[in-house]
Length: 155
Image 1 (cartoon, rainbow, N blue to C red):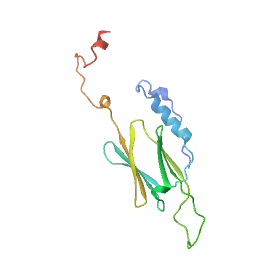
Image 2: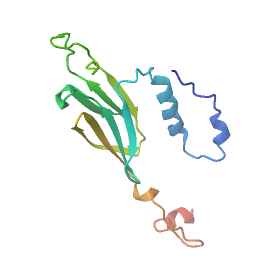
Image 3: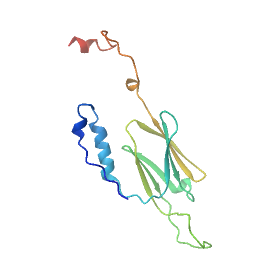
Image 4: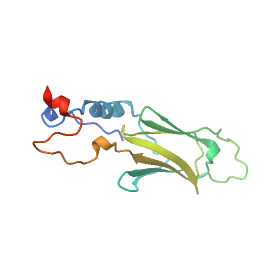
C-alpha cells in the first residue's frame, strides 16, 4: 500500500512558523525517497522516556554477525549481510525467513543513536533526543537585559 502525501501549501504556515523550511525539506525528501516496503522485517518504535526512543526489529534466525547498522546523514539503515542458504536439508517447511533485507529509518536532527543490541532475536537501536541548553525552557526578563545581549539592544 502506497501512502500519498496530501498536497500541502507550506506558505500557509509562514505567518506561524519561523525557520521550519529545513524540517519541511526533510519530510518531503523522506516521502520522495521511500520505496514500497515489503513489511519485512517487522519492527516497533517505542518511546522509552521523555527524550529516549527505541527501534526494535524482530529478526528471528539472524545473528549479530549477519547484520549491520549504519547512521548517515539522518538515516539509520539496517541491512542483512549474510548469504542466504538454498540448502533445504532437514527443512520440511520454512516459516522463518532468512532473506536479505534493507530497512531505513529517517531521524530528526536532534536525535542521536546511542547504541544497538541483539537479544533473543530482537535488534534494539537506542535513540536519544539531545536538547541543547539554548532550546531548554528559560525565563526572559521583561524590560531587562538578557545576559550577553547588551550589544544587540544598543544597536
